Image (cartoon, rainbow, N blue to C red; front, top):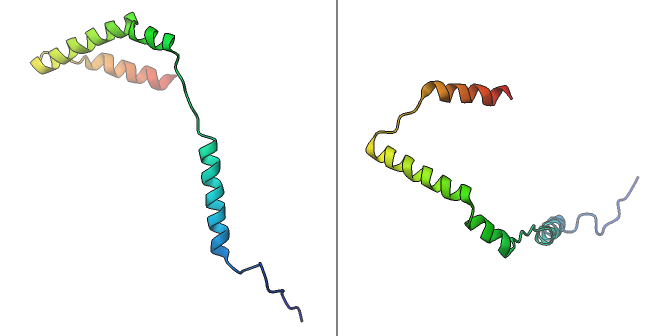
Length: 87
C-alpha cells in the first residue's frame, strides 16, 4: 500500500494558476514594443509631395462621388482582381 504525502501537491491549485497569470502579465509589460519617429522623419512625412498628390486625388474623387459622376470601370476592376490572385 502506498501513501501519498500530504503537502504542497494539492493545497491550492488556484494560487498556482494566479501566479502563472501574474508572471505572464509582467512579461507582457516588459516585452511591449515601442516606436519612436524622429522629428526629421515627421517633417519629411508632412512635406511629402506624394501625400499632397494623394490628397488632391481623394478630394477629386469625393467630389465626383457626391455629384454622382463617379463611374467604375468593371473590366479594370476584374482585371485587377485576377492579377492580384495570380501572384
